[in-house]
Length: 149
Image (cartoon, rainbow, N blue to C red):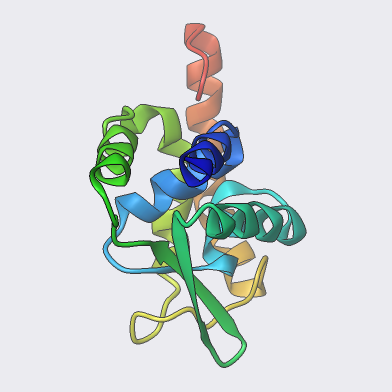
């Protein structure tokens, strides 16, 4: 029973929910750097949330040299199967900005692995490249009165 309580507590935070949703949205694992840049919070904060998720047995970690990758655990029981199904049912629009940032961040991979640390120069250039179009999109959304997620 304690594990289920821990898992539901872990799901009660916006950042942890976002991390789980991002992990569930891609095949394979994500580097802490990629999660950090996609969500836009500090590396320290993301690492703290990942530690909580790992303690709740919702994610697993794998170290490759200086890189640390996280992935969802294989559900050990029906409760966790349903938890992950509920996670997958959250409308993608709730995480659209993070999802777009993650796709951009994943485009920097080499050999399907992370090669750039948090807020790297390569990442900054990629964000700046799309920044002008994103800023234009934000102005259009603001003018229409629609609030972003």
